[in-house]
Image 1 (cartoon, rainbow, N blue to C red):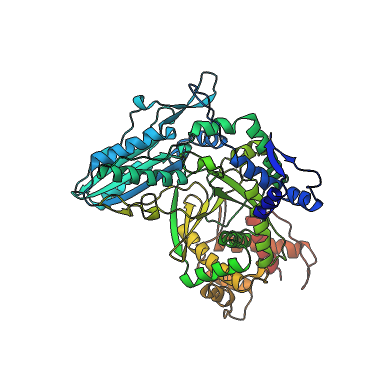
Image 2: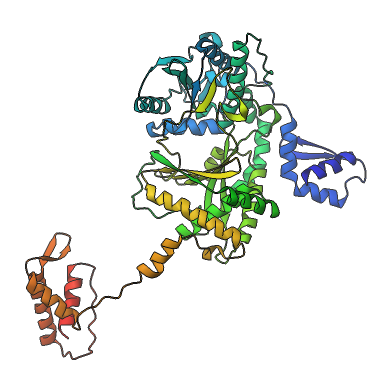
Length: 602
């Protein structure tokens, strides 16, 4: 639709440009028909974003230090807490099988660091507390690829070492914030471990580095000159541009949308858990993998195509539907990341461009799954059209009362990954060396309570769930993944069924709830409860019958004190069969004694 509108504007010689965040129109007389004006108004935000991305990002003036982007400020704050430091590391490890030229690998690593200023950036506060980013000149930079000999090391030793590298605590003031180690396992087998703090890069950045790493190494191995395309800008240029007045004016337009979305009370997602949430947020975590069948994956893709939506929209709606059943709510906020690289200058950049969108999905009790899909599609499209507004800026504007035990605004993240591994993506390989992901490691942290990370490979959808182990047990997450599969299958098969009625239980769980838990028939002797109690008191007079706080009563003591109270009732009041005796007491030991006494009084 937007492409058709642009073609119409061009054919009518109508010019558009963005000035201080506002859309300016230059058109010949009578060219602006009511239909064109209505179309421009309907797609105003998309046109502003598109035109803004076509303007080159100017180079910043040379300075001793540069401004941070909003996302960098947020990560710097989170990283000041010990628990939050390693949680924001981007770690990759790969096994190289074959004859590896270590010297050329090191040289390729150094050329990457020279090429991308982000990899040589550190963050410092001046005496006035103003935080800035400083770029270390190439000639003063000391970071390099390290070589570690662990020849014939056991798998446990290698796992422990990779875990140590993964949990490396970066010093944001001193750096380096991008480290690499090549670990020798045997003569022709090595493991490359790379770790980067999120404040200088993101997942897309790792993809950029992988392509360039391969190109440089392969060129050096074959004795060829390596020529990479010039970078139009560096990250400092982007950060200064983001902080400029014209750019802030553009972002101001998107701010209104997000503030309207969260203008009323922000809901909190409370899922059932056997654990007590820690008073301070923790990042201890584990993960679980779940695969969907190829047949069901194909069915989902067909369903998405038939209904004019993406697979992610269906998955997001299903997550919302299932969580609404778990938490008994129909107003849920879930986070989802966006690459933040709409501008043409940013495609091959290394830096933190990733932004997070807080997707608030609200629906009614009677909403069907089909209706929920329509709501989810509209919600996501609106959010995407305003995606340039930084998440951290939204948090500041909302000025929420902070709960230190939770993430801000949402506790669960939903991701659809279309990027594969760092060095094995896009068919890349080192000259004469086979590369495979290093599998002997386990992620031991989780940024959020729950992260649903979907990916599709070779026609098969998979789900990787990361969870905070201080909040959820593994068996809860296992049930959650199974319930999601069942909910999704049922919802797609019966889209006109109400979300509140869609079955997500497995056949064995349904049988347990409907039959096993309701099998309560027990053969008791034809006697009263008082008779049963008195019989038990005679059998075990010294056994403990009642505990409340520090108070303990044996069966004998409970029998005697309830007898005294029953005698008092009968001697003081004119009671007969079927007389009502009101009991108004706190929930303590005397409540039970009184009820037993009333029954004994007949």
